[in-house]
Picture (cartoon, rainbow, N blue to C red):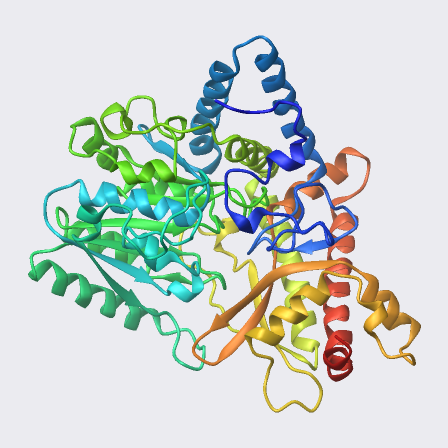
Length: 521
């Protein structure tokens, strides 16, 4: 495999994904607004989208790079890369949640993982399949193409150029139909769970009656923190339609405890995860967790991955025992994927070193303070998100850790739409003091100079858009690290809450100066 061990770690972290990882030379940021190098001066609550790599994770990845560079000098880079990928595939279930026999397939993103969930479902028998996707607007912008076995981007993670919306494999795509269930009404209000459950049940009944197999997505959680359909409802539905229905949990946000993930796997559900949302690893670190009842289809020789997927993956992303499935694969190593997961696993281990009850207490205190601050702001409106109903009572993942809010400038008749929110999101993350009016107060100029990174704007219903500020894993692991240097958890939390309030203060300032900023820009 071709790899230059003299390349710096931050450059390697941007490889093996797509153009969204490329860094703008002027800002030093990628399309997500984050950096492949530590950015400690920025105030960051962007775990719904992507986060700049932390100092600790970057140092951890640099150690891996040196290990691989030494192996290259000794002429054994291929073997060392394979060993490191095996370590990652084994460690992901241990850090995320597992049942005996769980396997992990490494993917650059949660969207790529859709491909393999689809093919594992198709491998069960020869029937055509209906893939039921929940709220695609609140999952990923291109999830519908991937969920139907079609190319979703012009360039794949392995650097192949493809035609968007064309089948990755024609025979596979011909067996697949899509169905969509929404989780909000047109105004953006979450639909009642019983209504969502009834709609999902009726759709599964209809498709099975048509002689089709069904792959149902359980969204846990959406970009705004929603879960749908109901977890216990889906367990019952899967039991009722055993032999006709597979379930894949879209847990790309991974705002889940190990127990919750293990519970899904124990019911035979596949689980899509990333290490780059809640757990704040570098963007583009995905995986599909496969329970043994589904992985057995591979062992029995019922599945072979179509050759078209060579454009997306390579052999070491897959379990060693899945030769029947993986044999067509070739391609170069995905060094960037390995390094991004190496960083994410460091973050996961740091988070899980904190007792779950303490993790919940930390998250609860932070979220309560910031929720109150948003509700007190005259120009922000917090959008409703019911707490998720799953897992062990009292567990940290019973909290809604994403705060979504609309933003309205003074005298405006309606909140800002997507295009304006995108502009506001960029300004929030940059020094825009030069754009302020000459008579702006000194405090406004200090706020304008701050780099504040939060989640990208998202559509909420048909007409409403919102920004997102979220609690991520570093809030919890950071409290523990503070204790090791003699600071109290409460002092650390006070600082994090104060920084989040600075984000809200800068947002308020930008909204007050909105008309001038738009004209100046």
